[in-house]
Image 1 (cartoon, rainbow, N blue to C red):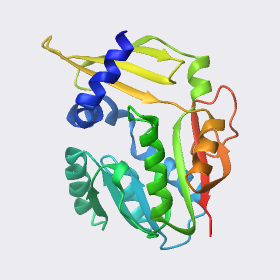
Image 2: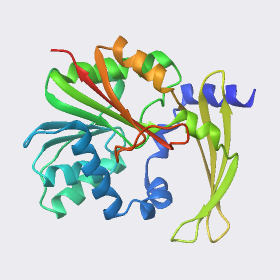
Image 3: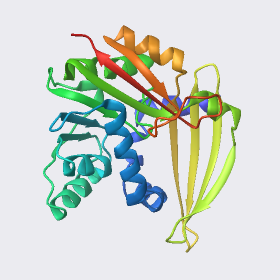
Image 4: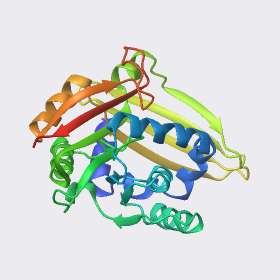
Length: 260
C-alpha cells in the first residue's frame, strides 16, 4: 500500500519536478569530479564513435557537466532538461568557460526535434521516471524521431540485475556541508520500481524529505522497447567505460541505431 501511494503522489506532483535542484547538487556534486566527468565523456565519445563536429543532444542534461565538456571537444551540443535551476547553472558554467551550448527547457515526453541529431545521449539514470510505462516508450519514440537516419542513441542507467544482487534497503552519507543524507529504499518486483525515500538532516537539525521512484528495465526489456520504438540495439556494456556487462555490473549502457 505504501508503494501505491508513492505512485499516486507522482501522478499529482511528480517527484522529478522538485528533486533536481540545489539539494540534489549538495548531495551529489562532491562525487561528480572533473576527472570522473572527463572519463565519462571519453566513454560517451568512444561508445558512439562520434565524428568531429557531430550534432549531439544531451537529453536530461542536468547542470551540463557532460554537455559542456562535449562542446569543448568540438561537438555541436544541445542540452535539454526540465529543471530550470539546473539549466541556469549549466548556462552560467558554459559562459564562464567560454563554451557555446544550446540549452532547451522542456519535458522529454514531448520532444519536437525532427532528424536533427547525429547522436542522442541519456545518461546517469535519467530514464524510467514516469508513472505510466507508455510514457517511457513515448520518450524513446521522440528520441528516434530526433535522430538522423543512421544516428545513434546511448542510454546509460542502473543495471537492474546488479542492483538486485546487492540490494541495500538503507544507507547514509554525509555531504561536505555536514548534511546527513539517509536513503530508505524499496524494490517492487511486480512493477520493477525502485523507490528511495531520502531524508536530509542539516547540521542545525532541520530535515527535508524527498521520494524518488524509478522504473528499471532488464537488458532484454530495453532491447524490445528500443526495437518497438524504431531503433536497433547494437551493443551493450557494463557502463560508459565499455566494460563487458556482467550480472554484478552496477551500470548498463546500451547503444542503438536509428534505421536508414
